[in-house]
Length: 263
Ligand SMILES: [Fe+2]
Image (tube, rainbow, N blue to C red; front, side, top):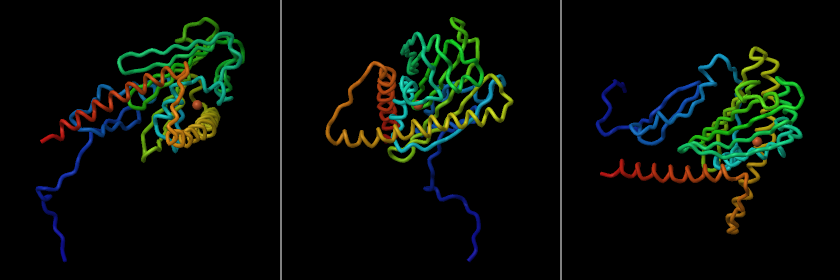
């Protein structure tokens, strides 16, 4: 039997998707390619284009829905309880503000006149300082965390910046691929520090966040079966805004997909 190349049968077709590579990240739009909102790809330029910064990257697989991971990341009050290596110790003043710009949600925290975290002490002395931690969410699950430390009452643009990227991709039902990157603009050429940061970040995201989020997922499944409704607290404000935007965007996309499929 011999085989010879021939044109594809007229009825054979596969669906194609819009794909874009930026800053070492591959962005895919799972809807109709011509409707891909490329101008909505959020800014992660610090991961690729800006030579003032370097990054350490990691990955973990979370056995929980990506929306639970979003809840975790939008309420960073949990850092004080869950992450001894990342928390600011004994701040004299703490502020929290939620902002929304279109479909982008910010959860902004300040820890003023506190002792910087173990992570920040790689760049900054263990003395009274101001720390800012501002989480930016872009649909559906792309988060940029602006973290920095300065002297007391100094502008946030000064001092050391150690942002994070948190990129969540839904996997099979109720599971999440979680890619993270720790970025910095100080002590850039230091492989030993890269390794220390990788260890600290893994301890926080894999050793501390992952088991809590997975336990939440297990409890939530049980609670939903009982008809229990969650109680919302003040620090949930940013996560609630995220949820509202997500619900609206998913409904809009479903409607657009239906219209595109209609004969
Ligand atoms: Fe966390």
